[in-house]
Image: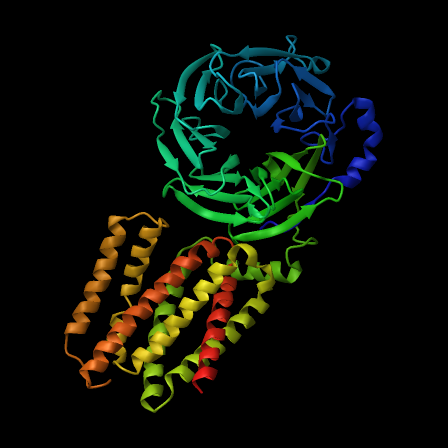
Amino acid sequence: SMGATCSSPQQQQQQQQQQQQQQGGGDGGGDGGGAAAAPRRPVAALAEVAGRGVACAAGRAVYFPRDGAAWTGHAKAVTGLAPLPPGGGGAALLLSCGRDGALAIWGPDDGGGDGGGAATVHMLDGAHELSATAVAALGPVAAASGGRDNRVVTWDLERREAVASRWKARNLVRCLGGLGGGALIAQGAEDLAVRIWDSRSSEAAPAQEITGYMYFPLALAVHPTDDNYILTASKGFNGAGGEARVIDRRTAGFAHHFAGHEGDANGCAWLDAEHFATAGKDGTVRLWSTAQRRQLHVHQDADTGIYTCMGGGGGGAVWVGTHEGALKRFTADRSGGGGGGGGKKRREGERRMWKGLEGSKAPYHVICVCIQVVFSGWHVIASVALKDGANPIVVAAYREASSTLMMYGLCRAYGLGLLGIDLREDGLRFLAAGFFSFCNVMGSVVALDLITPDRFAVLQPTIPVWTMLISVIVGLEPLRWLKVGAIALAVAGAVVVEVGPGDDGGSANTADQTLGTLVTICQCIGMALVVVLTKPLCKKYPPMLVTCAYYTVGSVCTVTRTRTRT
């Protein structure tokens, strides 16, 4: 697995400073490592080009810092770059788009070599009425572009003409990517949506639309091995937004949601199947893990003001551009040493925690069965204690306090700490989850004092019913018939047990039985709310840490209630 550090190229930059000045831009190409200097103006876009290293757009030119080349052709500033894959039968290397609304096809000079930095360019225009803001290669001879005119255009690069133009109201395009072997186009827009278009069709309606953004996406990257997943980086301001979200096209929802940038997250790139990086306006480059569902490392240079874009990602390295016109190359350290994010102990602990669960779903099913066995045993133990005259609130306090202490012990063993939680963004959600956890535990002990354990247990399958209803109401999950059928079977089983022969335990008072049943229903709703509240948190933090945090809140509420009662 990948380590949790990013390395800055400052030392290599100092060693190569003299050579960079002689070459007019530096030796920081795709395989050279280190840093490369671009002209002192904001870098608008980056792309790694086979055989030429990294290319950057600044002003009206496209620069290749490794060999000092500068290509010009656009009438206005360049806004996007995309490398062309080999196999088109020609020498084209790169695509660009600009504020002039045009698309440019770049290649080496007519002689076939690099020509000392010279290039041929073919300008394609007439498709966009306003600025073209993003471009993507769909194959060696096909491309797509998007602009502020609400259009997504597909191009035939051999015929050098637009094939289809799709217009949708308020679809101000900010980022583009190709997927499905070029059959589909992923596009992010300022109306808080990501749309998937069929490049083979000219229909104006997108094939799929993913909504739910609070801040519109500024950049996207398609997963390197599974194009069902699309990474996006969003706009932000003053600590709000600046998010990284991973879309799952199969559910039209978000598989992961991370936050951490203080402002715009201007760029993103996959490093491998489980790790990605983001760069932001706050001057930080951040390394994230989808497997561990958390941020691994934050890198910030004192001399860097704003990161404006990110490119690359192949081989575990990314390039980032700055507002000051510099390029920096960051690599992920696979050795696991050094760096921030909690230290060596936490990384080793988390590797132990996840290692046994990788590659097979069987351990998850075994764990789920064990959870149900333990959970059912709690009902019986609590009922016996209450029959012996124990105070229900005291029983709840002992349960919460002992569980919290064990959770703290597990978190400590795996190097996790509550200080890693962003209270400013997630504090209210943790407080709410903790309060409903308190309601769940208190409701359990009160209900078990009034009804029998079997009646209490058979009502627990209503928890997924309430969870599904709440999730559908708040838009967290879509309503699916398979899920409805599975829940119906669970409820039917509970009804069969409930209407069957009972036992003589519990209170004989009908009023107590009715009250106990109502309390149990409220307890189930409380547990459902805990599940709904913590699901987004588990995509951002390790589930063990999430459980420990909200259980701490619940324990404080229970102990406070116990002291008040006594």
